[in-house]
Structure formats: C-alpha cells, structure tokens
Amino acid sequence: MDAETPRIFSGRPFTKEELDLVKSWTEDASLSRADISRRICESFNWVHADGKRPKVMSARVAMLQMEKRGLIVLPPPLSPAPVRGRWRIQNKLETSPSPVDTRPAGAWGPIDLRPVAKGYESEFWNDFIERYHYLGYTVLPGAQIRYIAWVGDKPLACLGFSAAAWKTMPRDKWIGWTPEVQKKNLQLVVNNSRYLILPWIQSKNLASMLLGMAARRLEADWLARYHYAPVLLETFVDSEQFAGTCYKAANWIYVGQTQGRGKKDVKKEFPVPVKDIWLYPLRKDFREILLK
Image 1 (cartoon, helix red, strand yellow):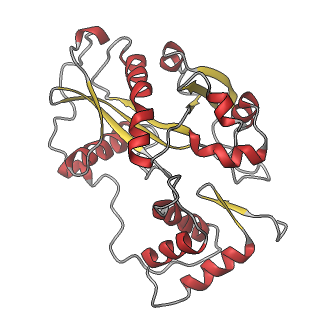
Image 2 (image 1 turned 120 degrees about the horizontal axis):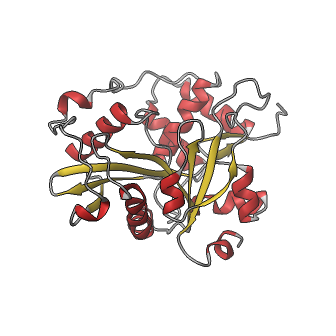
Image 3 (image 1 turned 135 degrees about the horizontal axis):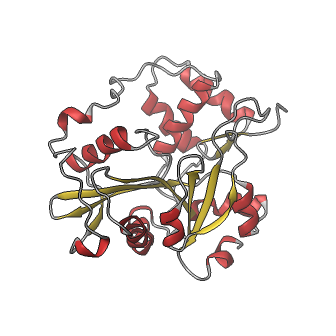
C-alpha cells in the first residue's frame, strides 16, 4: 500500500505518522490500553459530534484492529476479557418457554420498546444475541443504542443500532454523495446491526411493527445520547439465509447488494456472504442534509 494512503480503523483514516505515534505509545510500558485510547482522542482531536466528548470506545476498537493487522502490539489488558456466553449463567429469565407463542402482533397489548439499561438488561441482551442470533455477540462498533421489546416482564425481541458501514457502493450511489461529503456526514447514517425476534415468539407482523417503533424513536434517543440526530438507517441482510421480508413490510428501501467481500479484502481473496442492502429515511429531507 502507498505509504501516503491513510488506513481506515474504526471508521477513521489514520496517516502513517499517526500510526507511528500510536505504535510508540504501545511500546511505553507505563501506558495502559485506556491511557493510549485517551491519547489517541486527545492528540488527533477524535471527538463526538458535540465537539467535547472523546470517542474513547472507537479508539479502543481501532487499537484492536491495528493489532489484528500486525501494526502494533497492545499491552496486556488490566482485566480479563469477557468469556463468550458468560451471560447465560447470570440470565434469570426463562429462555425457552413452551409452547411457542403465535399470537399476532396486534394481540400483544402495549409493547414497551426501550433502550437497554446498564446491568441486568444489558446482560439479557448480550445473552440472547449470543445464543440465538446467527452472528452471535460482539461489541457493536462506534456509537450505539440497544433495545429490548417487552410486554410486561416478558422479552420479545432485541435490536441493536450502531455505526454505519464505512463504504458500500449501492448505498453511496443511492444517496448521491461524493467521497468528501460521505466522510463528513457518515455519522448521520446508523446501521441496524442486530435484530432478533426471540425464537419462541412466532408472531405475524411483529418484526415489521417493531422496526417501525424503533424508527420512530431512534432519532430522539440518539440525539439525547450523542447530541446529534441521524437521518438514515441501513441494514445488511444475508441473502442466503433471509429474504428481508420484515424490512420490506416496514417500508425500508432495497438498494442493491454487497460485493461479497470484506471491506479490507482489497485483493478479493476472502469472500464473505453477499448481503442485501436496505435503507430507511428518518425524515423527508434526509438527502438534502446528507449532501451538505
């Protein structure tokens, strides 16, 4: 790769000089991972849209990606990494009730779709995604909000929204933005990165109804948490496993497919599943805002 070409980590381009500086920090035995992530944010002015809060979590993800690429060696973590599936032991909810509940979406009564709180709700969400989502549990990238849909104390579904994909040709062409504008406004696009109707819930029209509920409240929730409001949602549906029926029913817009390779697979040596790309505008003037 051209030494002058920035590398993308956690959605941010890093120049060679910046990567060399990060590497020097990782070689300083007095600095922890947390210390290095703070230095990255402070030195490179990597902050949220409010211009104040450092994007520490994004910096931590970027560091892990750099280490995976062999560019740095991070100091050992101060606390052990979580064990996949650890939430199973802590999750006290009945996780496989019988029989399967088949009542239609309109028969549930009031559904409370709310952001996941810290503590036990976060453990429930992690546990269910790890057990029942085909991608399993991983930390969502960048800014994020997780939801659980409840009826009383009964969970129905888990949804996760996080940072948008860095580049995807059908989406970018549909929006019509240039690379420069795309880089500036990408944070205004949010990815529905996880969606799980719990397997013992087989409720007609529930999936599309919950997507609608999430779309109606996400803008305000995101604004309250991150001090800016997204204007467009995206999602990627594995076309070999799912038809995307609930997204179509919820009025999401199909714009094409991914190329079937990872974003770092520039030599096309490591194919990944082709995914359908669906988009949902959160406001009528979304395109005008994204093209500014």
